[in-house]
Length: 170
Image (cartoon, rainbow, N blue to C red; front, side):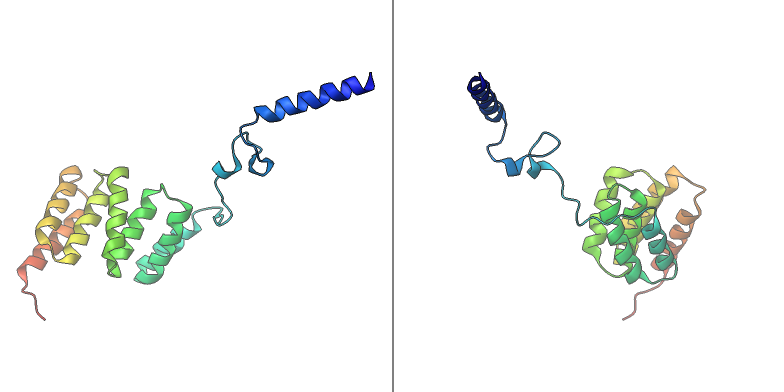
């Protein structure tokens, strides 16, 4: 009787193992799928609140654009779906001359908040910094159409008119 139950247990174990999706035990996960499909979060830093965003905004307001850019870059890793982080990242990238990263930020924002005055003003200001006054005006006017009372938009339009009034000097 004892050997019959051992034999039965042996065949049941083989049947269970044959039904597994993976032939290797090292590739099994506690969640029922393969271990290789579980995201590795070992390099992700934990932030209990928005301390990165606060530090980034503080550095930006103090005109420490390089430090702000560094904080925003880390904040993107921690909060990749936060438009405020992407706005700051793109703006600080613009201010330190990293146009490629600014464009990346604005591209992300175009899917998140495409018709918000904050986005349109930032893109317009980016074009203003690059010397493309026509494109800057187009974005500032879109922002104005959405929110005519927005003080940032009014300031940007005034800055744009001043930029066009003065000749470039080398």
